[in-house]
Image (cartoon, rainbow, N blue to C red; front, side):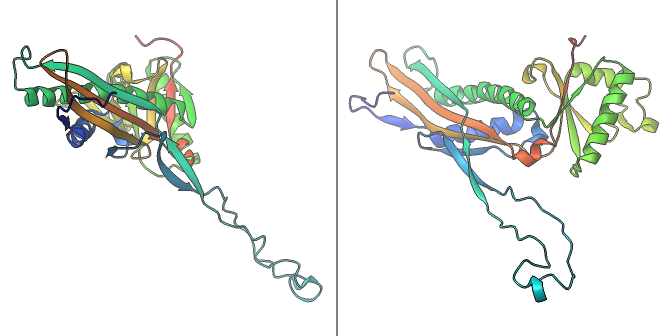
Length: 295
């Protein structure tokens, strides 16, 4: 973007844009529970790194105390330790990259806009924030699918296979020692099929709101319907604990520049964002695929 503005003023809207985008994302984000609050910065530098995290790959080993008289004493002096092998604990700095960008480039002509210029700018930033939130939702759905530590398949959209799926997820969560409560983000077709099942009643481990015919939980797992455009093509559900994925976005600039070829301003903004999850937490993300299209 050029910085030559013929000595005309440039108005900067970066803090406002950051606030609007954060607010709208907080309201409209898909996979809401799985995400930590969005991390936003304004005036970020032009680089590929968002932040750094400290990780530790040293495994925990439960040993035994060796009380053998030949260990460390007598002939064993200086040859080892009764506590076992000594492991050094080292943390590594891991860089987290931005992996997508967002941009705005629009013209607002005072002669034709039929509204206050500042009001028009505010409207456009809000509308762009809504559109960009939808794009971020798609990217987060793709990220969850790509980083799921386990994949299950829903062979058929019927009661037998749905029950089998939830039983398999329960066994996996127990054996993997996922201690946090898990939520299930599902397509509407799967949600409707669960509601319509003959066994869906409180005696079978479900919780239905009678007034709205809405299913709150099934087998003690909270169900959240997500629009299908936020899932990858063959993914029909994602199971995840709360708050294990961090979405982030940095706003480089948001400004209006006086135009030369019409009586108005050019609204310009540039941002970049990404999503992060610790490798250890990927095992807690379970995606469900379907071999056949859902009816």
